Length: 148
Image 1 (tube, rainbow, N blue to C red):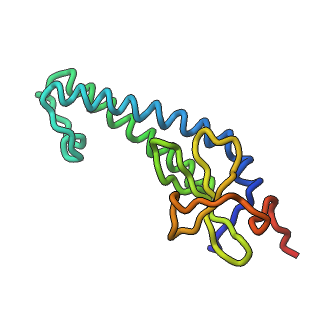
Image 2: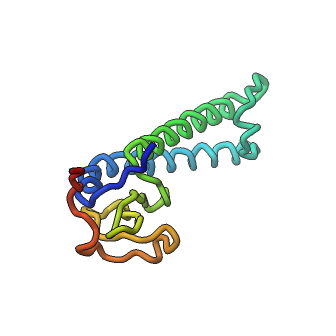
């Protein structure tokens, strides 16, 4: 399957959806922390194996916290999958950082958006990462390119 490249305008049209997704992601992360703390308070150390086990002898509050944690975790994974389905790659959950593949001249780049930004103003190479962000310039297509 050929790689999809985004223009600035295409990513900007996704911003309202990305904002909704990351608002949900931040809420889910907070809810996960609450359940993690409840489990720690009950003396349960969080692990993949512990979450997968269903022990009927566990205290009700532990079974409840595990169930909530699993549900929140799955919903978080679903939200992140939505970003991937849109064509983005989540780079940082806490800041809502997402990269979309783009082109600058003939070079493959990543169009960089972060929660709170109202437009796409930066790009970087895969090697440079977020620290190498540069302002969008005339070599980065603002509109989709026609395939004539």
